[in-house]
Image (cartoon, rainbow, N blue to C red; front, side, top):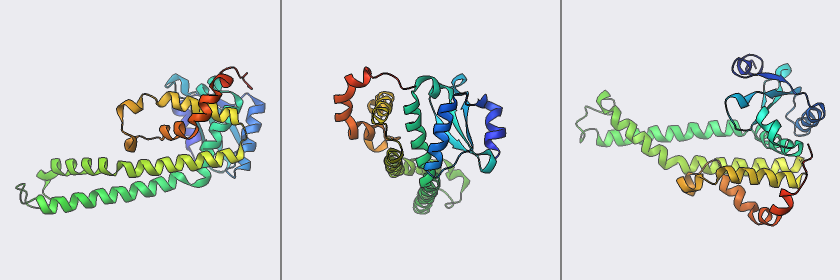
Length: 231
């Protein structure tokens, strides 16, 4: 509850969103989606990062929408509404709590596997038992291996959350050109990742956004590049 009024202003410049029409539009969107927001603020992220972002923070009287200055300067109003709708969809669906629960299960699985391997291998490694402090390097090695092995599970869940959030957002905003432009931006930002990671280990699910709408993006590329901004 204190984050938007104390913690965020400690690290970033925050001020009320000056674009009144956009502010009313986004607050109405939050209300339609059942997320609720008092007002919207501009978040000075550009001083520390070139990334564009949007968020819903706070509780009760401190509940507010945060839009980065990079988002406001580089995206049209329709695109901003699409981006925020996606973030609100995560909130409405409870994806944060789902992710925390899954990470807890995966962490338990990792420590369980480590305990079993240590119990089985400690004698062969010259350890006095699984609790021997000198086995810490082995414990870290096992945890690292299990983390890598379980990463596709976490990323598959992340992909699913992203897909469902996109679908829910699309139900509340009907800006097909803006949806396409946003996906094109995401695809462009993620192209380099395909050279470094194999698909099961890729998260967020940039490739899914490209695959799902690749045909529409290709056929619409010329038209979208000539489309005037609505902001």
